[in-house]
Image (cartoon, rainbow, N blue to C red; front, side, top):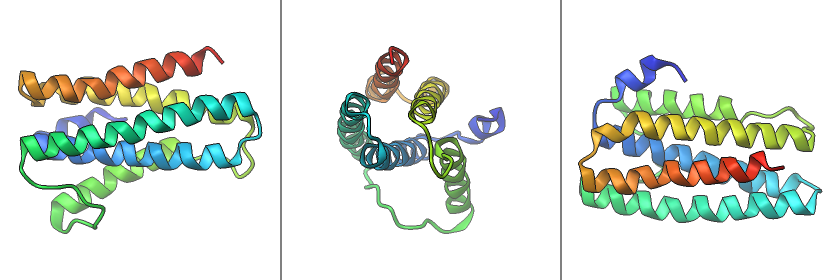
Length: 154
């Protein structure tokens, strides 16, 4: 992901919204992958990552409430902010795009790339938060590191 994207994110609200959309995209990817993949061992691994992503969405929602007092939703946002968040979502979508009939290795490579990108995003955006908020935010990156390690063992 380009440095311009990170330089454009200067508020906690945008960082949280972006991270929430990132995790939602991950949930969708892992749900679809679990439905499509035949390898039961890999499906089990991806299902455990999926559950962790779902749990992390709850953490992000709580962080939003604590940081900004507003709640997240999936509605389209309007104006420049809405266009910016949409562009970020498209970046995430490109990262998770797969061929029509992906092989097991393609699923693994996509998942690894996504988790690596998540780590970079969290590390870049964490300084926007206070020390207390940063711990919750950084936990997303810690989860991604653990997922990446599990995926790399395959």
